[in-house]
Length: 241
Image (tube, rainbow, N blue to C red; front, side, top):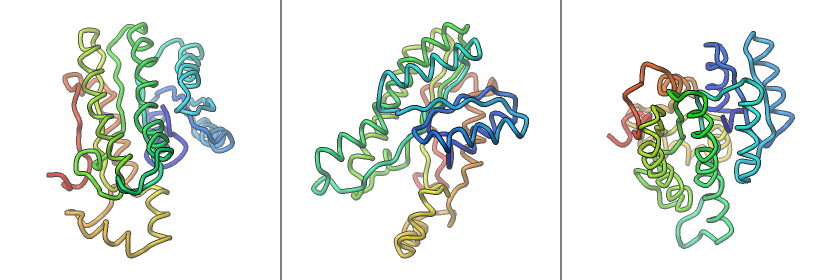
């Protein structure tokens, strides 16, 4: 999995390990990654950290290769890394555009490119979950590049699902809304009025939790969701209902 050192990724890594999965975490922050993997092992789980820049194809290939070489197979993956600069179409420079697409969309392509063959080689029956965003469906004038990338994740998910459906491998996307993560807490700290504006349009009146996202991700990677593939599943508190 990618982006497993904080927020939604961290919550999923902890839950997956607690349920018996052998978790391989890829992220750029080596110190934080080793700390998270150590905490999971100390809690009785099985976790390994691999320093990974998700925007570099060779590093994504190495992440998957390490998972297979260490544990003998790959049964599931969570492509979760994302983020990047904000800005409208008129404000976004070329560098920020390419940076956002690399982090939020190309990284998912690299993940699928190596994860899917590894899962098929492991006997099939596995699954991949890609973390998209409600922004890729609903839109946001201040997040042009991010919106485009997350919309792309949904289309890429559907293409990948059709490509491997005959192999018994499933690929789904999460359409995540406002989730209480360190990134969100940073917004709250820097600009409480902006945070309130985001909360004011939430039908449920609250942000979701990382644990709620982890629960849905675990379900989509498990056998109970065997007939769900190519789906973009909202977890957004009815924001796009």
